[in-house]
Structures are given as C-alpha cells and as structure tokens.
Image (cartoon, rainbow, N blue to C red; front, side):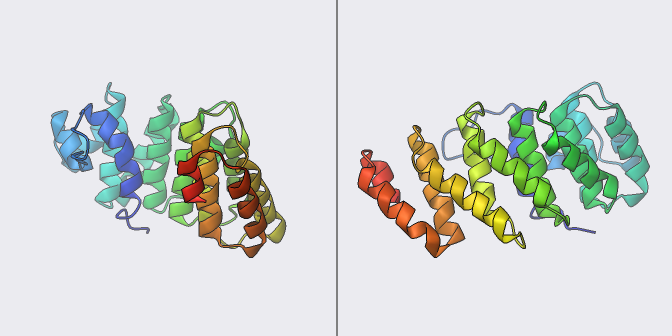
Length: 234
C-alpha cells in the first residue's frame, strides 16, 4: 500500500479551497483532512467517515474518502467504491479515486486513467488525475504522458493549466525515445509561445530534463527574447 505522506501535498491544494480560507500572502495555512472534517462537524470515527461519503456537501464526501485512506481503512474500500460510482463532482471523483489507489485498489487507478483521457473533463481535474497516477507509481504511463502533452500544447487550455502540464513532462520516467522526443519538441515550440509565463515554464522544464539536444533551442530563444525577466530564466 502506498503512503499518503507525499501525495497529501497535492491534495492539500484542493483542501485550501474547501476551507474557503483567504490567508494573508505568505501566511497560507494547510489543513489536514481531519481538521477540515472537524470544521464541517464530522466526527473522525470510522463509522462517521463512511456515512460522510454520502454527505450532501461535496467537500465532505471527498475529505471523508481521503481520511479513510490516510487511516488505512482497507475494509472500507467497498464503501468508497460505492461513493465513487454515485459521485458527479469531478474534483470528488479524482480524490475518491486517489483514496482507492492509496488503499491498493486498482479501480482507483482505472478511474484516474478514465479521467485524464476524457477531453470533456476540465483540464484542472485531468491534471490532478495525471499527478495522482504518477504519484501512485502506476505502470503503463504512456497514455498519461500523451494527455499531459495534449493539455500543455492546447491554446484553448487555461494558461495556469498549460504551465502545470509542461511542468509534469519532467516527471515521467521509463518512456520510449519517441515519446521523450515529442515532449522535447513541445517544450521547444513553447519557447516561442506568445505568453511569457509559458516560455518561462518551458525553459525551466527543459532545464530539468537536461537533454543536451535542447541547448540550441534555448540559445535561439535567448537571442529573440524581448522580455528581460524571461531572458534571465533562459
């Protein structure tokens, strides 16, 4: 069974939104699943968490699933599966799927793969699914990489999600040469994107990948770059 420790960091991005807190800049507080459930007056007993999987509040439903995973409640896998089957909120679905994956249930990974492959799901949650699959160490990640590449190169995708997708390209391991080449081509093309933040993100990811074949593209990008703040990143 995978530890929740490292993956918890990703989930906490959504947990901050769930808390509806507006922290001072530089003083954001990350809450644990248990703390957020207590804010909703949900007891942290096993029976109460199972009941909370069907709560009317969407925040409570996915928090309950994640808390059960954190507590390693393997016996509650059927209850989480049932909740996932009934769930209609995309954010809840990916987090419930993650909970199942953390509890060693393959149906969680299956759901995550369906999510990132579905172009009708908004990019934000497709990217959550990709992150979770990577963190769970699921095998056969080629289709996962393809989804990240497609999101990263689509100009219809929100800029923040494109940045995330480009950053994720550095996290794939054991991929075939042609798949790696497609990522490099996408990143090198993104060095010419109209958005400075996309150009910056592409250069940072190329640096993380450390492929010598990209040096020429980075040098060319420096030569044509007009934004001084972007030039310093290159």
